[in-house]
Length: 465
Ligand SMILES: *Cc1c(COP(=O)(O)O)cnc(C)c1O
Image (tube, rainbow, N blue to C red):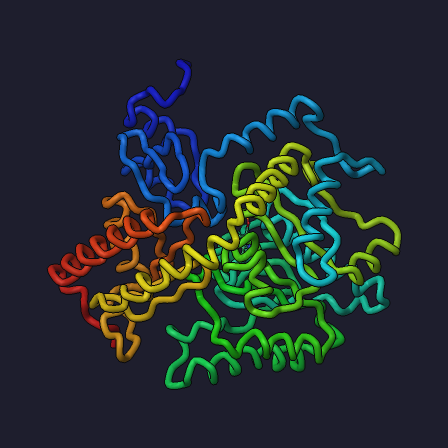
């Protein structure tokens, strides 16, 4: 076979991709007809494709490229580490400097007594670790029947069998099933499900489902509750202000463990180092990945509080781990990423510059006839598309069709904005500058206008009955 490089014609790359590459979360046969867009390079917030388009990536890859693309320092950190110690494991009473340094740095950054890190290769793996960790914790405590974990419908915790089971995406459960001992309560999605309640009333009602579920199962059977501070893949659902304080009260009252899945909300995304700080949550375990390395290397982990770490660690072997737990190259790159985040004060940039600048413009999108609500926390935002703002109606077409069409218009206008159902979502690199935010908003308006015109022409502006 000839060497496959960026210099092959796009059509040839697409043909080879379709012939041999199975894409995640994709209808592969359908994509094969159309051809995947070939991304060839990236710098800052900008992607380049094989056709020479310069695309503004308002999703930071998959919510992960927090410091932006193409930072040389990270490439150098990886090269240095590969030359010095390319790999060693941490299973058999050995360790190495990158794992030590990264664990210590995370303990310093994480709030409260979250002082211990169990490394994984991804967010999904880290959540699989969390299932074992919390069940093992209660086993050591002499309460082995406390093993049920409560998650939320439409939550996302990864797509391994464990992570997918913790998550509440029915489409994922439908492909391969779900492991036992995990149940779900409803999500705090006021826009879609709040009916006539105020957001505050609705937030309380949804949080109280946790208490009802604990009582229904019997607290003697419940190990933990897991939630994302802000649901990401579920559509950037920002919970009403009453939600997390009530969840925290219930978790405290019944003494179950709280897992905050910070895979997206961690590392500056919400304007603090962790979403738990933004929402005043005190988790026993945090799931991390994505922004930990800004996506330059695959790495994730669980940051664990003193008590859970001491309990599990004090009871002999914990029979769990990954070949690449604490991989030295991934850890060295994550450390360099965190060094840059701190040195360049990127969290301050989100809180003091980028969020305030974007917030006004993002809110102004609600003046568009298609846009119902606009939500933004830090640099994580969503808008709800609707045929009727006053009633928060859904479209008569199947949910997601309008969102998909809007995403296609964004794509055509060289803006990566994703859709979840009929919500459009953004999560740009945290280093985005005001001038780039202007481009983002300009392209978003243009795409919304084109979507509106197309919906109108096709008679798709009707509300569902
Ligand atoms: C992406 C994500 C995961 C899964 O992480 P992977 O690295 O894709 O396995 C878990 N939880 C949340 C909140 C995520 O957004």
